[in-house]
Image 1: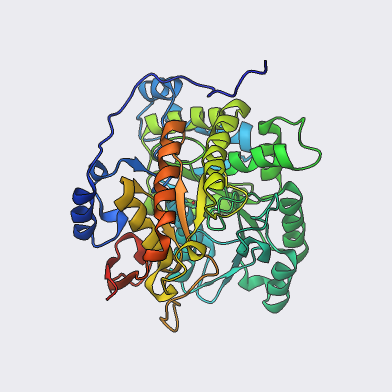
Image 2: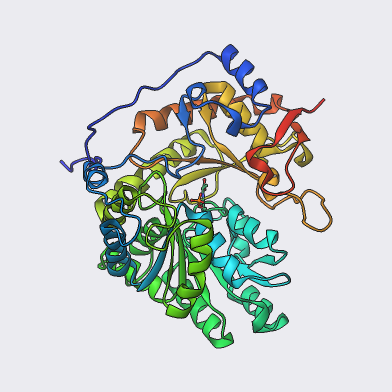
Length: 459
Ligand code: F0G
């Protein structure tokens, strides 16, 4: 008999969860102004708001915390991080930052100016925020296939090379300080980018003399998909694939709260010494001295250990299988989602489910609230609220996709939790015809509004 699949780790410490009644949740979500970011975590049973900083560290990472060196300058923990980044990613220079957006801040403060153009494959919201805040423009060059949730292709996160070259031809190279390639492509559904696409984007950038930045929050998951889906990589180790992926980049920013499995941390890594030196000023100003940049020594030690563990095949197989398990359950119930399932999350297609809710009333947000009311599960809207207003016209931008992201924290929940999530979603799906109204905005910030937005039921 073939043995079934099982997790590549066992549990050493547990944290209690809080169940609640529907009546309680109705009160809480109203108090939270229908913004799930405003809920207290105790009001949530299964928290799928994000896979960022919510993973469970290993015994070795906790041990690394104890050996962290808190010296202001030249801490041993810094050199542990340097060694891991050099060995696993292949970069000689880096600056630690407190998280991914801080790495973007340090880099873009140095290289971006008003009027610049930054092409990419679905820039993450903080990336786009940092670009637009500097009055530069983010141009999305994701392949159009990513907009069709039912289409199954292996690398749906890819950059469209024709779209990218059109941008290169339209603007002079001096106005394009960098191209951002996000692996995996979070906004398009945690979809991977193929090695061949990374390679082609890199050579196109070289041809036009433009730098390539890899936004590498979920780089290890991307490597897993390359190993399991791309011809020629089945026999390579994850670490070999990772080395090759980054060999095509000039710069890497990383939110280490994802694939390095720490609760806080990030960095920006460089191939070029001069750029590293230029960025040091903004690191010192905004983050801290260049050998800790916004991180405690202990956190740098845990991050270094996490980079190693996060790039092990057995761990990644467990991780990606769990996300796929949830997706298979949704298949059983006929619930549409961005296919195939992504690396870190299942992105449920709210537009296809809540067909009676007008897009002006935020379909994905409406579905997120319904799922919370159903079972205390907190997902996150990846739709018009996140897409924000056009910086010039101030009109709402309605993206092609209205998705409810169910992000799965690493090494945190069991497949029983996945069963609960799927069943709760099925209950909402079964009553979808009765959900006819969504929400209107009552209060919002001018940029990155989704975190603090306030909503009221549409009348
Ligand atoms: N890039 C990508 C692709 C991300 O997904 C994120 C964060 C960042 C950059 C910024 O990193 O949070 O450490 O400052 N994504 C989280 C999410 C917040 O829920 O997807 P950060």
